[in-house]
Length: 603
Image 1 (tube, rainbow, N blue to C red):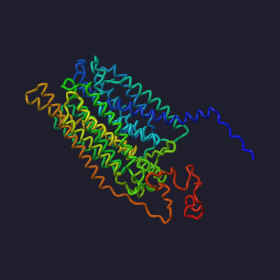
Image 2 (cartoon, helix red, strand yellow):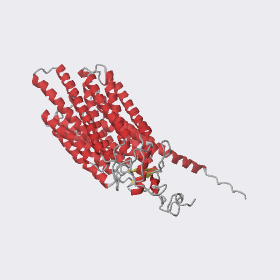
Image 3 (spheres, rainbow, N blue to C red):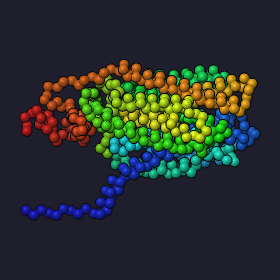
Image 4 (cartoon, rainbow, N blue to C red):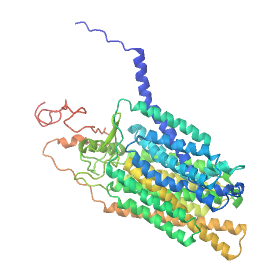
């Protein structure tokens, strides 16, 4: 019988297929650009640099009022971050990214016309609100990509965050060299902000094209949304304490307020139990990184300025550049380590068997797919890769009768190693700062950036997007708490020098250096305390509950997670066994209820 010729495919349709195939890659590139460009712009909004240009202020603006107004960015930012995380229940990340960058651009544009402390405060509040939208939205944009891209974009985002925290003070001071107007502090990088805004517009367009034909939307569970909103309470409290300290509080009272803020944040992370040990670990890591990296780097930058005997910013860029490169390299190395060493096996209900051997990220994310299809938590399909938004990406939280398990051993050790590197960096600051050339600072800055990037990357990859947003909502209150604690130490040292009667320039420099050394010691002990707290709580976590035995030779419960030896491909169906994605019968299922006729004698 003659075979009819195959119908020809029009060239226009082939070109359309090519455009569709290129669209995900373009979206991945745009999200990566937003992480690399947008995060530094958001974090640079944090430092209060108005005192550097105080000589350029008009007589009507000089004083503590302008200092207080210019410092509003961080208090507003830490209040907006949890609200932005909760808003991701109703909005996709792309509109929030665009809104955040639009607020930054509008504040930069209006900054050239500011003429009063009230206007400065309003514009800095806009900077803080835009940054508070941008940081969680870029995180969610990285997490909504398919799995292969996500393993690149999430560590890229984590490294960009840590590098931005490290270099934020230096980046905020760089445009102020040889300026003739104090308003430059309100618009440090207007051109780069415009470029980022254009990239965000492209991201919105690509995102809308990618979701064409799909009515699914990101829906966070109500409990997770409430947890994010509740963190706005401690954030507002820390912000109120920070504003209160500007009213000439004594150093002892500042230290007490800072200690209360520092203690309350880990307590908030530990009280939250619904997300399991992974969410707690991510929150503690974010608190430690926020508390240490930016407040420490800011003090180091000021101590190393040319007016205090240091090399100035020009002598610090090599150290900051190497530290940023180390952060990116360490984040991607952490992903490779997790892929190669983390081994778990997952049953269809999400219980974990640590004795089995599977590739870590694939099994973790596949477990979430199996649990999402079995228990029905809200998630949105991105292509053929379901992105669970039920609080964990690993799908290892508690639901039904399953208990949350202890954090996977290799990943927990990797997170601890990252925080130990941060402590080593703080020790290096005590030993190597001040430096006349700036080159010795490469060692502590690299340790700080790389250690923080490893800890954040490993923690959020294991815990998932919701836990990462919960940690972010506590990260920036920790940044402000670190500034409060460092300011209390610094004010105490400087007031002691003033009371001694020997107020010389060298004595003031020694006071700044001494305060930095004490801060590094205190911060190191706080990070060690967070490490010990996390280890103790992890030991108290209940052991994973084993899956119930099945009388079948090959039980159907294994359909949610096919058990395989190391190196085999792990496949997790996106729908429960026995039903197709459209809701019909499984074409491969035996009528007697056994998959592929196994156990039913139907072969």
